[in-house]
Length: 450
Image (cartoon, rainbow, N blue to C red; front, side, top):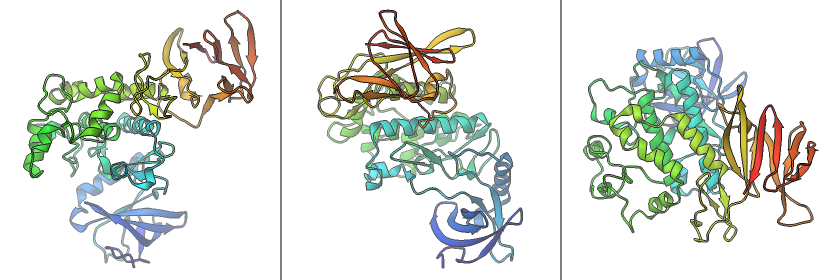
């Protein structure tokens, strides 16, 4: 027995006539219950709505999403509507893929759950980057998610891969949905109920920024001194905190809601360790963006900044901890042991765009650094960390001496400071020296700089 609305062993049928058999109950939420089901193509999942929510509007939304037929492995997308062929169970649900076990929920970070103990600073920045790219892809299809929050993003603690769940409330921009969002993540105009304000891609941008702040700072961007003074965090208190009087904890012009020393040490420490390139984006979206939605930070801005920060992560030589550094900036002190960081050489990449060349980014050549295929693309839609182009490796006999190993099937061309030119065959390594010029092919060039 499933101990839910649907009994174990019950048969449901999709609109295409495929029969599925109900198995175990995965869990329940605000809209319905999710079950494992067996199909002719293997195990899948079904979300079955509570009867009072299985209305014509929700069915219309589902039909529109299914018609999109979107095949993106970052989303558990609705595949087909399912019903009880006997008519004994009122309502309907929808069929989707099963969430793989490697994906954990984001609140596990707050709980310090053992399932996420492998997550590093690099992993968290990668999760942020993949999350931004996933919602950018959704918005590019003209679809607004409407309810971006902690509970809808799952991540792999080892790789930083993400999976967006609960996609049944996403609607085509301008459409209507029964869900306006989760108040902690909702744009202020929605919390206040401003006339004409509707959930859409513009309000998604606010929710996305809240999610990124929570992910990187381990705290809500409006939960500072003002929040700590609230004795009962009820709906009225939340409406003021997130809607009628929202104050960013690090608003440069309004210090009322600063984090409280001794009470909120984590956000104080993480903000101090955050590179200015990310701080500036949070300040923009949580100050100007609160009053003027058009000034909210766009997905491409987040993508470019997070990608640059990811490429500038540097390991402290004293304590071994990963540090976020400002691309092209001066070395900070290690956030853990306070030792001055020693920045490794930087690989400055230049990519071809039409008939012109432009600098894309610099990669800090830390001992663990890699060059990926997306580094060679002037405007990548998606960062793929499986497509390795080059890898920093240590000399097998001379410790502390590093080179860049060719992990492609193509031949690189390099030019040394003395003017000599040589080829780097697949699998071969070139020693890293300041002034070294590399040609990766396809008009992509790079130079090693101190």
